[in-house]
Structure formats: structure tokens, C-alpha cells
Figure 1 (tube, rainbow, N blue to C red):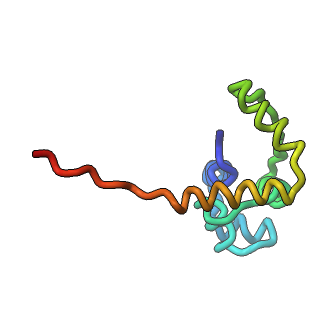
Figure 2: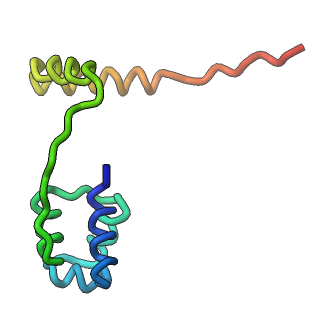
Length: 109
């Protein structure tokens, strides 16, 4: 799947536009275009659409099925949780990950 920043860069370069020129057309700053293209800044659907429209392009959102049925089970379970429960679960996973550490192997004799 193409990252939105990769899409913007590819289309901008195909049209021979500099980041500064695209930014001017899109009503933003060159630094913002740079951050989006490099993946350092997330872009909303509205902002992505505005940038693409500034290049004369209309975005087309498509969907595809998940690759594994297991993914669907996790989605269904997550939908049953409240936002607070989802946050608590994420915090628990983050805490568990923070507690993990690598135990060095004893030297071979």
C-alpha cells in the first residue's frame, strides 16, 4: 500500500512541480509538504484531497478485504469495547512491552 506522502511526491514529481510550488497551489507551506512526503507528518483525508486537487487530481478511496479472518475477529472484539477499555488495553500492552528486556546468553564454555 502506498503511503499518502509517497503518493503526493510521485504525483508532484510527475507534474514537474517543486514542493514550494505545490504548497503555494494547496495553500500551505513547503515545509508541510516536505514533512508529509517524508512521512514525518500524518495527513487527513481532507488535506490529502486538497493537495491532490491542487495538482488537478481527484483521489479515489478503495477498500480491500483483510488478508486473514483472524483480523476480522480482532476488529469485532475491539468494536465491543468502550473507548476507555481500548485505551486501557493499549496502556497494558505498552506497559508489558516496556517491561520486556533482553537477557544475555551465558558465555559458551
